[in-house]
Length: 357
Image 1 (cartoon, one colour):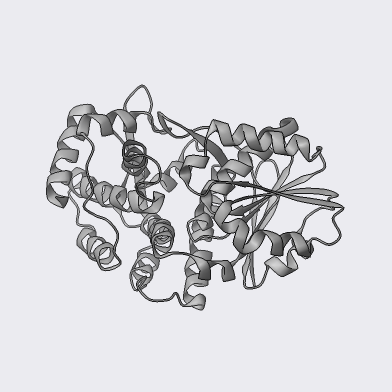
Image 2 (tube, helix red, strand yellow):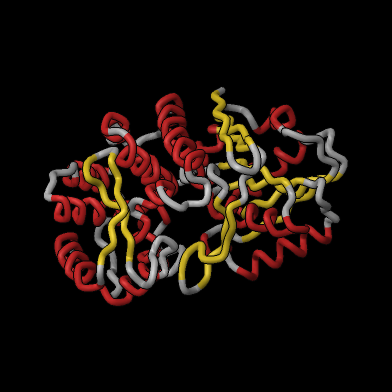
């Protein structure tokens, strides 16, 4: 078991990573609760929800609410449905919401917790690799048809309890999706970490000790940044490396057509290509491309129009005054935020799309 403590402006919480934690979850609860609502999706529900509810023996009332699996559930309709569920189960300000699932569930359940009765406790219990990133840092949100995560808040959990045994049930595309964020953490922090991650072969079963090491290092990178900039006013924006184009691709193709991490992987390639041209440097673009291809990431997609992508990129939360801001790399471990005008962006995107085919 590994524990990291994260200090925010509003609270301090532990991120606990290890095997078999679901069966011991009561010992990691930071407070005593009489009423708990577990929010999960219909896939994770069948795998782990009853197991989790059964071990919460000291809690007077435990209920489970489910939403359909997939990014489409990060919607105003499902958000309202879950608020109704919280009311029906009589949650009060001393109750707890547990987000059991991947990044979608964590974002959605966290936003419910942040706004129900002006905020109640919630715990992240991630069951995907991708959620090692989204469960830490306190960003909770739902999507709008115009863009991803446009409706949300900064609301940290009271704990993150990460049982890596749940990763054994992940399909291949979810493993790919999660590892894209691990690669991102390496690129913005440390060349040796990045090179270590590129040794991972995602086409064969994961090695638990290697995966735990990668997840712990990724969480440490994010925790270090979040503790310096909780509300994303400066360096926290570095965590969006690859996301400006990635979010635009997700939104344009339709949520669920491509996973978040697969879209971010393409976004990271684009950011690296722009970085090389902007700063006249050499980055391991080919090495990353080859790793993505070997691990079956989709690098060739049905591209939306460049103008539509740029319009979506302008809705990115980093953008200011309709000018797109991108996180670029001056070198591995040295990210920088750069403004790009429409003309520059159009030229870079056309060249990139032509290159990928």
